[in-house]
Length: 69
Image (cartoon, rainbow, N blue to C red; front, side):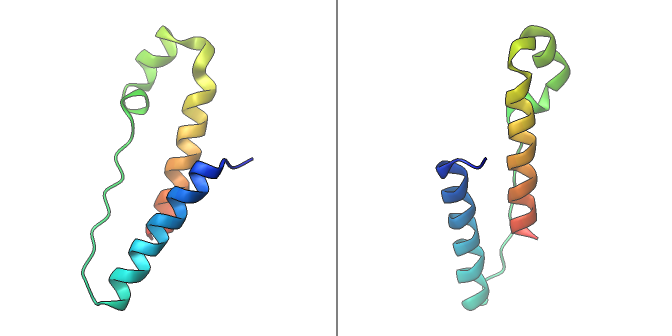
């Protein structure tokens, strides 16, 4: 299930990409993982009950990467 917030972020990124193409602006998209994802091993050790959050972040990160391609 996809949250409304995720859909809004994807729509905003898609709109930015479309507008830059229409106006022939060179665009570089940097998608930076969260600190939880960057330190995944430490996060899992400290917060084993919240591992689902990392999976959600991974899915969301991948979706944004796919939009940016």
